[in-house]
Length: 361
Figure (cartoon, rainbow, N blue to C red):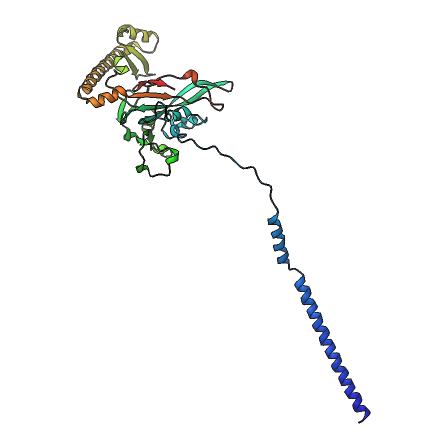
């Protein structure tokens, strides 16, 4: 064989070996890079790992909150409509967190209202009472509980100093009615399955609709009084001999009271003239006006007495016993550290129709 041919084969073998080594080196480099990639975490993996660590960090535990359990009848006085309170004074009733736990305990075993059917309404009394060293006029709510097997009345009285005469109208005309009170523990039950023994005087007139009412209609709500007619009790106004006078003249009306048992019409009128509340040329007209008012009052008193006698005669024995046994209990709020002391302003008087309560608590 020739030398040149042998050299060529050797060079060819060397080239082959170089190529094989290059390929092997490239493969090794690729394998090394892949291995590094597998070992090096991605940004996403790093973020997940960081988030996982943050979740595992224990946060300091906050102090547990404790809430007092609501008493079963705690909102009883609040659910009843505060009859006769001016609309712009309603929010002042809840200025304090009044405590009527005495009313609630009256329904418990041994209490004066336990096991009895009760009709309840709320009144308000503006009184000057001390609180934290300062005396101020406060709207005090009072709850009146009427013990009776049936509603004391389905009517409401509308009266005020400004009105010439009182009105006795059906409660529903003023969007009021006796509705059953559902204690807190029974709120989830069906009302028709509950046998309620507590009824409250409620009103469905929405406060948002007041701006659409006429002034006369609006004022009627503020002059409302819970009505009760007791045929065995003579109305305090039946015994009165005083009439309220509102004589509308210019430049200003004459407002006064005339007692037909003690006042002489001639002397009474002359005194008004001397006080320059009435002129001489208005004397005869005023005297005639007062005489007519007295006549109307006497007629009304006589008719009331006759109606009362007739009602007693036509009343069944059962209804008579109900009226004789009907009892009124007036509750004032209990004093607490957050409410004024009302103990010195407690009074048995409810209103002109109910008269006085049998017991004040």
